[in-house]
Length: 219
Image (cartoon, rainbow, N blue to C red; front, side, top):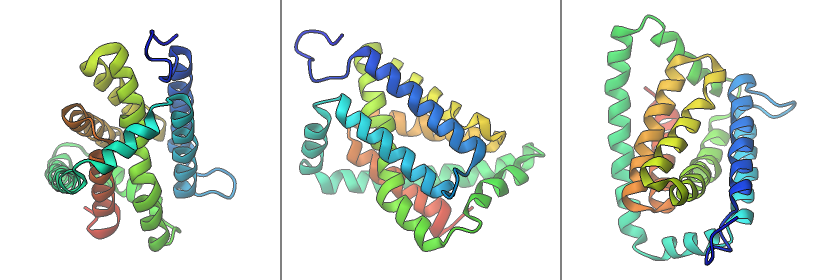
């Protein structure tokens, strides 16, 4: 149960349930890539939409926090988000070169990630990433899950557990490079959220990075 004064925050059982559901939905996504008529991108968008909706329903303060975050220093947060996206893109560019030298499976693993775009219109992927998946993932993973885990476990504990789950849901893909990439992203965006506690800043960072890495200039 929430402590006194936190009645609008999610109960521990509700938070645990959403964590488990999030883990299952995303693990299935990365394992199978397709759900009936839904390809990877539609399924990803659906997962984000469902879990974000549960987060808003469980955390009665979240919508108000997000509105406040949008109204306060938006230009500065957007700028920092864009800069952080460029930094992360640079880390991935350097990491790709190193991985290709070190790991014999790196090339096929990277190609498999980009293979997720096969058969999907580039405009549709860009719109889903830009309007739903990029911002929605940060609303789910950092703004809701890391925030509420951090209230219970401390900021470091919330960051670590969220990053572990975030990387862990990618294991079913069988793609070591994807899991490593998710681990790097989970820690990077977790640290960004710990420093600023701004879902808006994180959403800009995640969205800009994803558009760069998948649409604008794939590595």
